[in-house]
Amino acid sequence: MTDSVSSFRFGRIAATLPVADMARACDFYIEALGFRKAFQNGDPVGFMILKRDAAELHLTLQPGHKPAPFNVAHMLVEDIDAVHALVRERGLRIVKGLRDKDYGLRAFVFEDPDGNRIDVGEPLT
Image 1 (cartoon, rainbow, N blue to C red):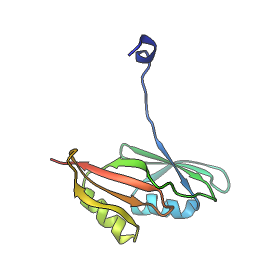
Image 2: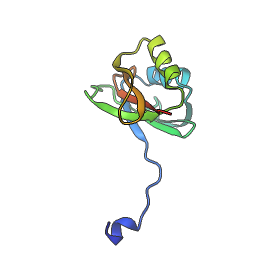
Image 3: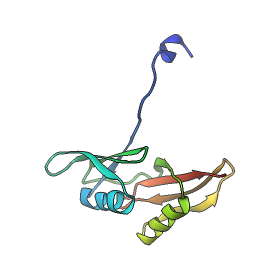
């Protein structure tokens, strides 16, 4: 690394998820996954910051949102089986099933209510 690159540090980096319906997104991330609202902006709300434990997500209202065909966020969790069960109970699409991966994670991918693909993983013990 050059001195100019090594002279600074990164702090928090948070994923920003586009959502077509803020109320629907809030229902999922707050009511289902237990995030709390840390900040919101606009009337109607066009931007929101959600937090839970060490995780942070930013939601941005994009009425014409078309979901990307790839993962847009990765979440590390404890008790991935509980998260997987909750996602299934909510009737969300599982893109890649729950499996132990050779890179040391138990993982699955699902689509949130706006079609954003979220990769969820838990380190194998």
